[in-house]
Figure (cartoon, rainbow, N blue to C red):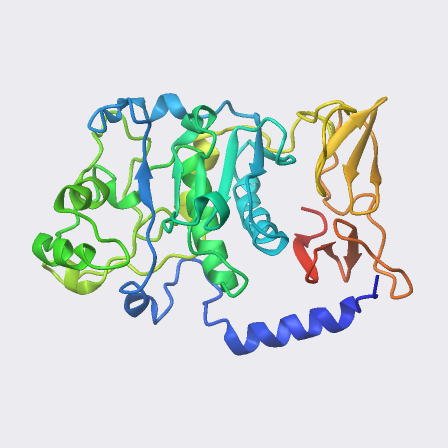
Length: 358
């Protein structure tokens, strides 16, 4: 395999960020062009079990996972690139919620099952997720209908974090019972009647105007910066108040998810929630197993020994990972550290997994 010079990659990535990233340093500052972007942004639909009465939202709290739970996730289709992007941004929730996503092979059992707009899902153009533990009941529980190799990182982040928010039980923020948005309903009906949504008035009512009862919603305050909020152009409200296209977790998102999934999110040990190796199971790159008291992760060329199982978690994501070596050839799934940051090899380059010590 041809060697990849990580130093050059990091430099190129830094330059690309300088040229193309218009986001502010503070997550509480909305991008200046967000309100214009709101007109063109893709939005997801709410997905409920078919046998449920959609007006009976009292089930929302009951759809939360257990705090500390390992949630198994698999891909039903999609190429390595789009899969790696979903994995990259979905784990943002793990920083604040006491849950853990375990990524398993396509033929393994899983709680969350992800499809992309191709193959058997070629006609499924929207993006959506079933709410919380409803995911257990569906063979296809989450979908990304507009992801491809040309999708921007901002859009990968925005939509992935949003859909995984639903998978953790979060509702749309504009349907918060205390939102108090002054909708221009006829303008909204007209807008969503056109492509790409082509929604009926009833669908608009369900996805935008319907609000949850205060006694069943976990939210206590309205947060227009929430990743779970639809973008709202000014012309969709009678008072001209707009909501931008939120692309990252807000401060309220972080504190709220920590409240409904309380406790340490480091788990009880490095092997917690990881199944024992099974010779009858086909594993994919990135899958983890335990074998004779040791944790392993599947790579393109074999299994990577991640160390002995123990009951004391190491909070440093770089623990046990070697520094990048320009004289070494790396395979997909391999991890390295470089200038205090953890990277993982993908089919198209290196994925930044965050600063060491986290």
